[in-house]
Length: 96
View 1 (spheres, rainbow, N blue to C red):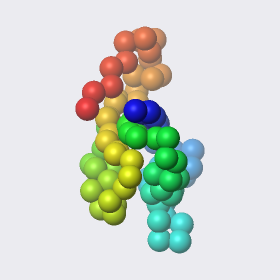
View 2 (tube, rainbow, N blue to C red):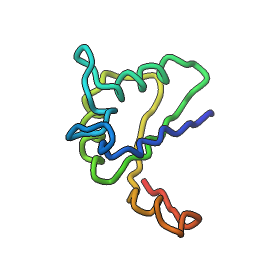
View 3 (cartoon, one colour):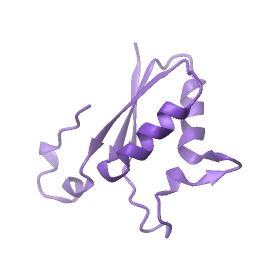
View 4 (tube, one colour):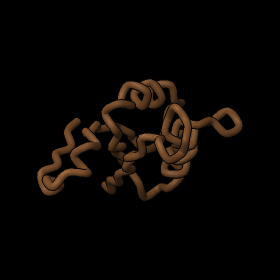
């Protein structure tokens, strides 16, 4: 079983929108949906964990629940991204 992680660490500030760029729609699909479709198309991948800024965890939960059935199983964990900017980076704990 091969497991991969996609880290969605952006807050969207540099992008200039109200949401991080992974939630922007291009031709009716978000960038995140397009990314998940690519991972779903790789037969060697069984499981993908999305690491998400806790501010957007509900949005990711809704997006995953709205997707059609996939070959790859997706789940997500949220993390306080402010920790990434601290001196305690070695103490980051990602939970499901």
